[in-house]
Image (tube, rainbow, N blue to C red; front, top):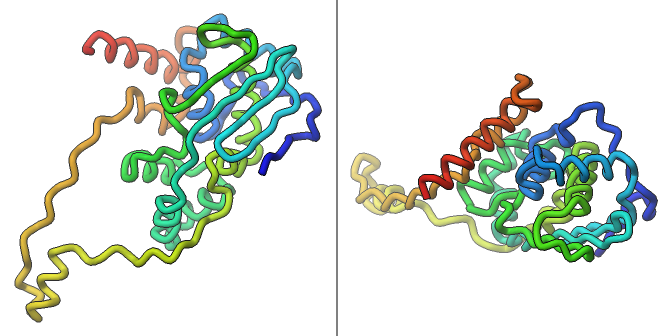
Length: 247
């Protein structure tokens, strides 16, 4: 089901900061869509977002769309599998901060960390997982896509549940899947009747490399000015450059 924000009226980003998107989810969303926020294209997009050039913003499972100026812009991402979301929801019931994130009451860094590094299904999709289109037919990132990204980042700060709606998990899905079976260690001790006799340890899970700048993104803005912006932005660009050279 699609939801049109503000009945289709223009949305004006009135942030007093140069950086639009202050919370963890909003910041990850903006940087994930735009990439280099210090570019001239990003600056033009910020100006459009602040001027109210973005209207008819529609959110549905897996799709965001809007009219920016005379262009139609869409952002698409695969929805989070319901089974994974249900499993995370069950395991998070005793963690208040996680529950606040699951219900869209807080931009929970903890929830994003669990989804990204334990399930390989980040709540805020990586740039490579996004499909960006604009009717201006630009071959690279355009200011219309940037403007929509900043408007949504601003709206996520106001109502985090918008991100959950886009990812298809605004309502926690309860399923009938059984709870995970005990580990081989527990099964062995229970079958033998001797808690001191354990079986072989399970094989370790393969390690996955962290995305470039993942720790910086999870920490958010530093508040330290550098190179005309925040220190985090300068470090993100440096890490990205180092990563390209090593590749």
